[in-house]
Length: 389
Image (cartoon, rainbow, N blue to C red; front, top):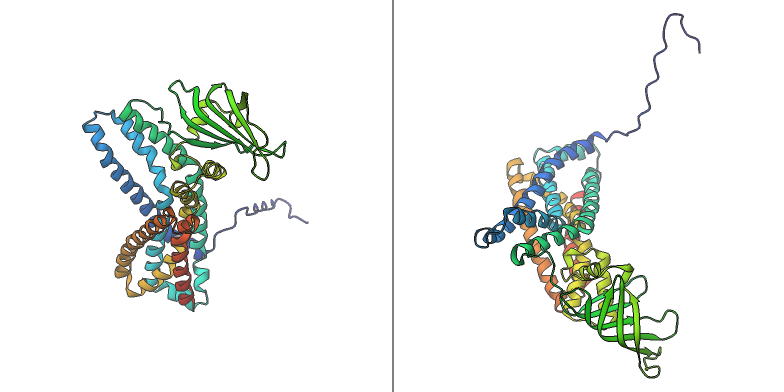
């Protein structure tokens, strides 16, 4: 390419690596963000204050150290995020789209040929992102902080961070398929009583059950003396006579006794979905059932259904906001705030009702956990169709 002497060529403009957000989506996003963070912070603050009043008695009467109480309170807050995110999505969508409808901006955009579904693309994508974030917090952060909060509570009340061991707990080793049942554990944290180990048929066609009155844990190995070993045929019949012998079997994943006991916590909110599912499988493998198993199943299903409620809240709120916003900006905003609280109350009511049905074996536990989302999602989808058409 020819150049003019004495004149420098202009440098090439760097290629744009980041695609700009369309003006419509950026404008809607600016409307959504402030009310979302306001509602999210308000919900967490309400949760914190509610627990604080419950813990104030320990500060005043039990003379508990303030830092311990604060530790209990702060670490308990992430447990509220599975419902804080849906409420924030509901509140933000109602207020943002209520204002757009109240100022006739929605009508102006739709008149220019943009469909209602296209206008709602950004809030719906944000709902999916918040669902993923909520699930991550619920799976990774909330179980750890709940366990730390519970330990702080026991340190306040019982002056120890050791959690109590609930008698008769199960633990499944996912790597081998073995299911451990422990009747109790002594204070030395080494001696287990009333031990039963259920071994699936892996290297032989027989299933094996090992019973022992006591067992000693050395490192990560459980040492059973005078254990009674019984083998069962695939038909369920006993394969010969039971044999008494010494049995050494490793704890799941080479864990220490502290790790083995702590992973069997009776608090389902202090474990993740994988550990909770393992506990459910262990109970089912040993023929355990009833309301205790149904409660665990509902809790496991809610690990996904609660975060997914953030997306359902957006689906329900957008068409509602488009309808109530027509009543005027100020009235639409007031109705949006009122509807946020009302719909949250309705969701709580349905959640409690269906959970009770699931726990009483009147309804499938997994369906009971998802029923509020299904109902709210169906209503939102119908409203969406009506607004679009």
